[in-house]
Length: 144
Image (cartoon, rainbow, N blue to C red; front, side, top):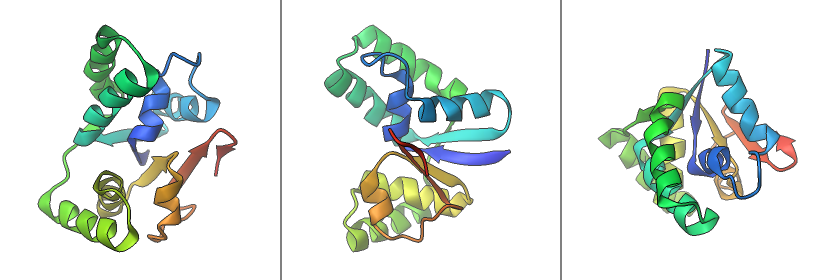
């Protein structure tokens, strides 16, 4: 099974009902997980980022937000970065001008040997050695 860390930009798209169904490239990850071909993971901070995005950007109801956050651990393992991962994230954030949040996703994926799934172009532009073997860039144009 392929292990994949999904950042909040991907996870929000799974649950954003404001534009109808999630884009096909986001649904693809969920289909692969259900078929047993991949193992999805998120960081503990993803819950806060997703909750904020659903309430502030998507405009979902508090009830829907709470239901999403309650169900998310059934779709993806929730990982808590250890102090060494956080140290690496601090370096990535400082050196590559990423937010600490984004740098933590990268550091956790590297530490565990997982693929990072993101829609965030800034992460890919940072030049942290992410390539076709270590990252999935999900965009409205598809997967690359």
